[in-house]
Length: 407
Ligand SMILES: [Zn+2]
Image 1: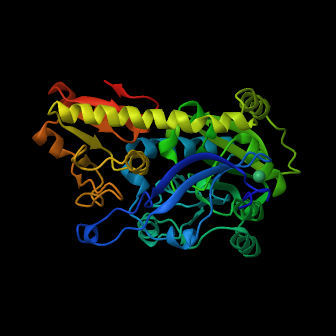
Image 2 (image 1 turned 45 degrees about the vertical axis):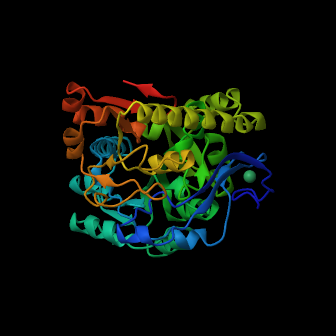
């Protein structure tokens, strides 16, 4: 296989998690009687452009376009993050009713609704029908397409180029990252700004966040790699911010390569930090797997120890990263009998691979397990606040990444 960005042969494995079902392929009770599809979950690193990426395998693209029941609006913290972002962009870019905002992967409209409320014309691009329906009910026009260069050029021909072109939480999920970036270029007005948010591979490595690896996540991005991809597409990163979301993300600000805006000092500073932390050295990537294995082993030891002592451990948050962790560790309902999740669409379903049942959060108060393992560790504080009563009743919260921690 060759690198998705620069085309050089991919010779080095960053992480091998064996085989796993797609992390969002939740199962109904009936589906448990049928065979389940497992795909290789292996991540490579390109030692030419340092793009960290999933290994290609048969029929992946078609499989992962299936609809799934994730609605961004179910996370309170995420909604607040989106609102703050919209307010900041409207102020800094002086957006008005004469501006045009486009968001790729607009989901259920959780972000664009802030622009609609401010009277700024916008367009969502979202191929998933269920979430696109929800966005249209909020008054957001939605183009039900996958985005790439062809779509970007079509928007340009139709006179729909954007002053602000947003891609929050989509860049890492795009199979053809070069084509997507050329699409951003095509759909961006002269003088326009594009912003992308994505988990920062520097934080993934630093905090051993191996459970953020899943099939739908094609790229694990550094500022260095994204700068190269932007340059190849005729764009330039002129500013970057570090965000706490998803365990540490970047928000990059791009413009046309010949835009008069100066590149901010933030860009050079972060490129320098990445270099200092070894992001352009193969050894950094090769040392990752043993650290992931240690976390997996510590979790298993904890679960087995509680089981031996007759104590119950339940889980909270039927998130994608939970599926990666549980499937790599081989955890089944004997060690973790149920997981609670506030999303109604997931309740009554089963986790892919592990087949652990997903129940409403109220079950925790009824069952009173000794421990609750929070799978989406990035929202630990939100979960603890929502479940403060449980802590008072003696239930202890546990997280497994970046190391086993019992509160
Ligand atoms: Zn490469």
